[in-house]
Amino acid sequence: MDVLPTREVNRKKLGMGALLEARQVMEKAASMEEAIELLKDYQRGVSWAFLVGDGNGNGAVIECTAERFIVRRDTSVYPEQLEEEETVVTVANHAIAPEISAIMIDKSPLRFEETDRRYAELTYEVLQAHGQIDEVKARELINILSPGPESWFYGEDLAQPVQVSVTIMDLTNKRLWSLYGRYDHTWVSFDFSNRI
Image (cartoon, rainbow, N blue to C red; front, side):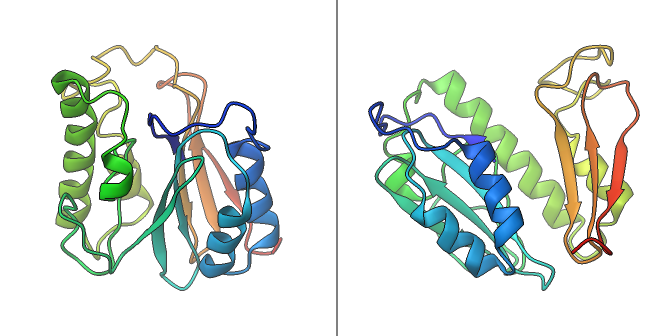
């Protein structure tokens, strides 16, 4: 999940927060459709993008504000959408659904170019690796902006802090990997196959 900076907020009814929403979805939803319904029912005061999926290969991006709830599925087609494969859906903090994109706060050319570039680069790399994404490739894909010799976003310093965390979930095999602390720290992994 990531914030979508839009004008559509409700400061008087903030809801329980995206982290708690995500936790409840993970605890209660047995399918992607159940996850979507749970997220749809939550009250929220700010805008978010949620990436949801299940172990059956289903995936969707939810772009939502205090008033709107748009589900962008792997089969959806939007004018600004770059995903060309029906089984691919990607997200950055850049709204694709026209109803949400139109109310983004910061449409200054530099800021909008930055979010658009992140979405475009990630989508391009995912499409290039389509059908061949394992744990190693997933780490490479999710780290396209991370510090290193090729990074235009964070520079080269690997000792800098990770902004929140970087997490990969393999919903089919029920495993996750997460990086937090600093970029030069070791990834941690968790196998939840015999826990659910």
